[in-house]
Length: 481
Ligand code: ADP
Ligand code: MG
Image (cartoon, helix red, strand yellow):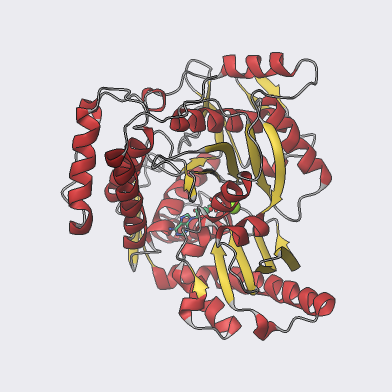
C-alpha cells in the first residue's frame, strides 16, 4: 500500500432532478468530487449564454435566456425541449449534464474517466432507464450499473457484521422515495418501497410563493399570480430563504421592483414555513407506511424492527421533518441519522459500489454515430469557466485566502494547506485533491454552512493535507489518456 491517494477512476453519479453529485473511491473511502467553485453538487440546469452556447449548472433567476431544469422528469418521454433555437430530446439534455460531470471528474482526478455507476429511482420504468443509458452513451461514458437510489443510500453507510434494518427517507427537489432496507454481511435487500414522483422541495417553494403573492395582494391590492416572470423571481428567492430557515428561525424574502410599482419584503418564520409544509410531510409519512406495510406483508417485518432512519435528499435538512420521523418510528433523535450529508449520501454509495467495476481503457460503445453525436454536443457547449479549467492548475495567487471566520480547530491546517498550495508550482501533479478540498472548505465558510458540514469538510482537508505532506506530490501510477 502506498501512502498516496489512489483513485479508482469509475465514478458514482447521483443524477438528481434538481442537482447531481459525484463520488469516487480513493483507496479508503468514497470522496465527493467538488465542482470548480468548491461546491459538491452541480445544479441540474442546462441553459444557453448570450453567444448561444450551452452552459451547464448555472441556474438563472431571470427568464431572459431559455434554460431547462428537471430534465430527469422528462427522461423516457418524447418531449421536445427548445434551446438555442432548436429542439433537443431529453437524453441529449441529460448528456450535457453528464459531459460536464465527466469533465469535472477528469479535472479532479487528473486523468481520463470512461466509466460510471449512475443512480436511478427504484420506481423508474424501463423507458427512463433506457434514456439514461442513451445519455451516458452520448457522453462517452460506459454505464456499468444503474443503481437503485435506496440501495446506494444504504451502501453508503457501510456494511457491518450484523444485519441492520433501515428506513430510507429520500426527499429531494421534485421526488420522494422511501424504502425499508436490510443490510448486512450478505448484501443489501430492499424489503419494501414506495414514493411519490411529484413531492419534494419544489412544492415547499410553491407554498412560499403562494404565501408571498397573498401578502402582495393584501398590501398592494394587485394580483400578480398570473405573471410568470414575477412568479419565477419569487420562486428563486423562496428557495434560497427556505434553505436559510433550516438553520435560522426567521428570514425575510427580499423582492425589490417586482414590477414598476411593487417592491416587497416579506418576513417568514421557520414555524410558519413548517406549518405550510405540514400536509406534505404527512403525505410522505403515508408513503412510509405503505413501504412498511409491504415489508410486513412480504417479509413479515414489524415496524419496530426498523433500527434507524436514514435521511437523504436536500429537503431532509428541514428540522421538523427529522422530528416527525423520530416521532413516527418511536426512535430517539440520534436514530434518525444525519451524520452523512443527505445531499451526498446516494453519490457516496454509488462511488462505493463503483469500485467493484474495473475501469476501461476506452469508451466501449459501438453504436454507429455515437462519437459524432458526442462531438456535436460538445461543440455546442461553451468553454468551461476559467475556474473549471484550472481546478488542478490554478495559479497559486488566485487561491482564496483563509477566511477570518475559519473555526479555530481548522485554522492551522487551512493555513498550512494554502501555503503548501501556493509554494507548489502551478499545476503540480497530485495537488488537485488538496486544492479541491481547500476550495470546498473555504466555500462552505463563505456560504455560512452549518457546523457539521464545516467539520466534515475540515476533516477532509486535514486528510488531504496529510496525504500531500507525507508523500511526494506525484502519484506513482499516473494514468495517461
Ligand atoms: P434531487 O435528488 O431531486 O436532485 P436534492 O437531494 O439535491 O434533490 O435536493 C434538492 C432540494 O433540497 C431542493 O428543493 C432544495 O431547495 C432543497 N434543499 C437543499 N438544501 C436545503 C436546506 N438546507 N433546507 C431545506 N431545503 C433544502
Ligand atoms: Mg436525490
